[in-house]
Length: 92
Image: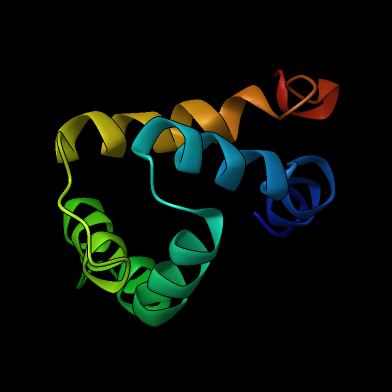
């Protein structure tokens, strides 16, 4: 587990993830960073849903989300698209 977290930190282009979310939503990257920072603990512990997190981001940006469920689906798409490949050590 620790190796996977370490590899994620080293291989994911988080800047590209937030740029992708900003582009898909029309809300600036700075709003995504600020909104998700506000709910990070809740997201990590499961007390805040991804849909609620998206709503917080839009609230902070004083904007109305057009399609929350599409943005929730877009988050992992942006995340996984930045990873170069599945590591060979995890292909067992």
